[in-house]
Length: 209
Image 1 (cartoon, rainbow, N blue to C red):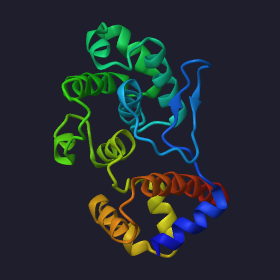
Image 2: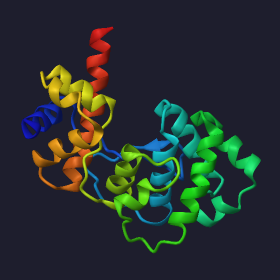
Image 3: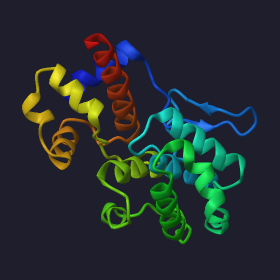
């Protein structure tokens, strides 16, 4: 079912180009359809920061906050760790819940700033303050190219729309395991599947309005 769903959504929506990265020359987030290269250095830090900033908010607000960090040179973990607290809060403010997210970024800076680029274990991420399963899997998939399925409200909506309510109503881990059993363990494909589920979930929501 998941492979046929992937093919149908790809035909409908086309490649989505996730995860968008900030265009350091012209400004704004840039989507890169068909590019599944694993980011490194500042780009990797930007993806991780974006995954944290996107929690419980509209992507437009998270994107503005990402741009604030990048343009201030805070997409480097040491620089973010050294940034005055009030200044960092102001840069994060567009993403809502900025006090908690500022603290989460500080925790992330301490953790990722000491790594040499090797992917962390999922359980390591889940032990970090403020990092839940969805954020952890976004970091693993988009920042490190680890083939995991990201589960969110859009995927649940798509599954319900396709008549799989019994799956959609499961726990995060149950849905993730179910989807991963039915899709190739390929990071590029799982990247695209997550992005396509978001596009389709938004389409379904608009139809229901």
